Image (cartoon, rainbow over all chains, first blue to last red; front, side, top):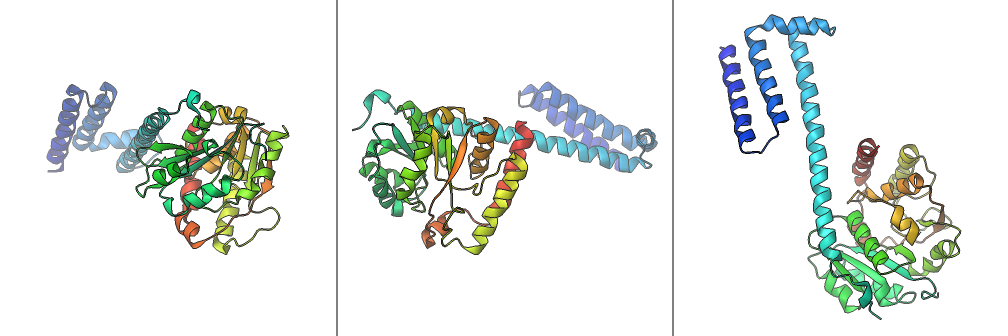
Length: 112
Length: 231
């Protein structure tokens, strides 16, 4: 049953990101990332022992721990990207607000 | 104080300060001309901009609230555009004493320093509430670790800087963390700085309007992230 659920979720993720790519809402790199995640979810569901092989390669005993570890890293990465984007948006808004405020400053018309 | 010899501009960020702004401006008019006071109305909705304009000072308006750091940068840019030689940042909430202005300006005017930082912990420390004193001291400690600079008061909005220093200091923090970033920029740019004693009046109004003690953690986190992502 879980294989079917993970397959549906992976297909939905890939389909959504494909639509996002077509609408130019996401970059092709982000699309590739979501495809990789989706395919990985399907592969690890159908071949659970495979994750144990990768886990042992980096010194982790259980495949599920490996999946958890990779998931945490992925979420951390996403957090950093979103934080940096929100900071950039804030900076852009401030710049815009500042330029509008400074529009009327004219050094040649100093008040006495 | 002869403000004509050095073109001195006061930059005053103001967010909903209408009840006290007129008194703060009047206190400064003893020392500078109205046009040399730049009030940055940071998206207020209580008529702060109108109160300032009634005093015939230079008024700039942020269409939306962006924070004290952002307002100070806007004010500094305006002052530089207007030909300032010396720029003073001064809080609008009436906490600062305008009579401290001459002593604050002197080191920059004489060329002894590029930046003068007001400190409430030099000399008579006055009526600083105990918890506020603790958080301010904690801020000084954090600044010493992060920016490796020894100052006695990191979050004092009363500062004086030369035009050259103002051109080199780059502030990216829109909110209260700008105060720590300012000190960091002094260090990064190798600016000559000194501290002068200033008197802070803690009133129920200024305590309600100013930083909350819990803001310390927020500011510390912001400045830490700024250091991580800017280096």
